[in-house]
Amino acid sequence: MTDDPSENQASVGPVRRLAAGVVLLILILVTAEVAVRVEEWFRWRTPIGSPLQVATDLAIRDATGIHPAPNTAFRKWRFNSVGTRGAEPVDGVPRLIVTGASESFGLYESPEREYPKQLADSLHASGCRADVLNAAFPGMSLPTVEQDLRLRLAALHPTAVLYYPTPPQYLDGDGLPQPARPDSTGSGPLRPLRPSSRFAARAANQLKTMLPPLADFLRRREIAALRRELPVDSLFTTLPAARLDAFEHDLRRLVGTVRQIGATPLLATHANGFLSTTPMPASVLRAWERFYPRATGATLVAFDSAASARVRQVGADSAVTIVDPWQAFHGHPAPTYFADFSHFTDAGAAKMASEILPGARTALGCR
Image (cartoon, rainbow, N blue to C red):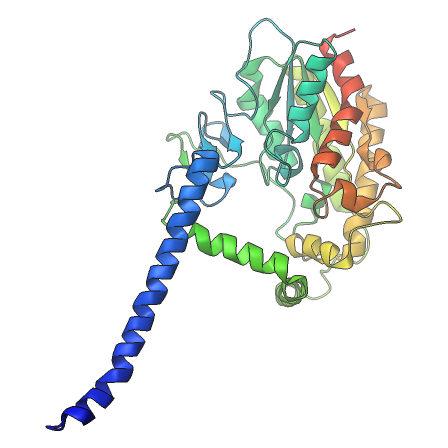
């Protein structure tokens, strides 16, 4: 600072402009955040101040394991009083529980268009009055599903249980899937929910959608970094027989549990976006590898097919009705039915529901 006003003004000018720019940027970001939250309130009735970012934030851990909290909602995902998607249970009618991971839970479908809901609509339209409760949840492993049926869902007295597996979970780098650890101290969220920006999350997703090459480049880098941390020679470049055997073992145990709780089991093979002459792009296969970096893309596809054969074998050995979407989606253009490597579009969910319908009607006693 000097006694010359012109020199003082010249030195302060850039500082003021920088401060004004920072304030303007903050105002823009705050306005964008408020706009996103208001839009979600109008569209989904998501509370403006809610710290939730994804549907899995609604999970709780209690004495029965991990499952959605009853009577909660986030965006299009809503849970009833028993902690399942679907209408409230009705006494005196046959009940089908659908369980599995994110493919059954529903990710990319329009609201109320996930395949369990479309199955419920088809059952009702065909004159079969039955409950269809969607007990699936993203990331649920087969051992966790078995535990959930035994400790929590058995109390709902299902007539039948349909399980749609996610076999690649058995290629996880951390070892074989394990049941979720129960916590008898009382129910509570899996992790602390801290305020975060919904605008930032949406902007990041939009950027990836608008710039697929950038998203694929970042995905390649992430996969490479994850694989560098693996022990030497631990990459699954061929089918790991022990992992496939573990999947079959857990599936047989699930069948026994379903029958033990007095229900009829239905098993489905697993479909993916690489079963036809018009598969999903290679970048989508890399997106699948990102979730299971210990396996190559070719191993993922081969393991899924081999696991579907094991599902059929378990069905034949245990007299279980098999729904075979792996076969049903073969030869059909994958982009019509899949939004990514294994999650359905509305059309894919509709086809899945139509494949399940005959077996579900029989299991529920509808003629």
